[in-house]
Image (cartoon, rainbow, N blue to C red; front, side, top):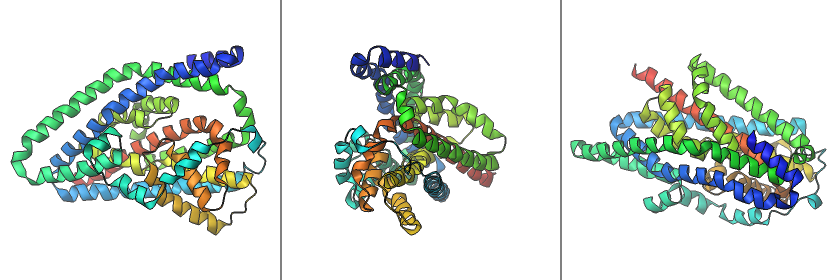
Length: 395
């Protein structure tokens, strides 16, 4: 609230200083996010390797992996379908008051679609070097190496015990660092919110009223679906989980970064009662394959741009777009503003002007707040559900 108040004061009372103020105040958010990013790679590597090595039974690893991927694919498909249905029903682009003359071009995003290819998809999955993957915080690449390393470690027997104990100790130390970093979280949230409001003010909501309201409705419906499924699986324990998720959800919403809460989310899921082995295996996979909020946004934004330009998209073409997004969205997961780059590339593939991304760029920050929070909820529910299924099987 302090961030909103200060950002609004600067935007309306000192507009000439808004850009400089936003640039400086956002450093607080940048510091917090970079501190979290600093520990993600070692945390994922250590916890995942130890988790797999302690599982011992490779059948269990495969079983957990199949359950997790079944959830991820189902949730992604439902999210994409929901975005498609809503944008066709509400048609926010038909009555938009925004024109290309009122927005700045988005050449940087349009040019970045050069990274959107089959080659990029393959190189994004398979690491060339563990150290390069860690340096770039490529979670999926770290997961691939960690799975192979954990399986190999499990297969060599007792000789691996010192390595497992060392990595287990490192993971506990890193989780202790998380508690220190969380002290900075309020400052990070304050800086991120104040900077955004100082630049955009509150008038931006009037300009994009239809788009934002319709997107908010989509997010609300997606939450209802996720929570309904979560209740069917977890029962009343869902409310305990939501209480645990309050802090990670708020941080993701304020900083527009689901990655920023990965360590805290790991900690809270373990406190909730999830098996650390399953958390360390499922959660990193989810950050690459289970971004529910982002998936819904991709169909919603792509078809919104088509509506603005008056381009007819028959249902069969929309379903083809949905399948393309389902497959290709994983290829640029490590690229900044990945959702927007996927939208631009998809528009180009279906003869929708890629430059139309400039229409939604001014409010993407606010949409990103909602989809980041939804990504966190989706991954928390997926991990809890897989843990419930697996624990029940063991018992």
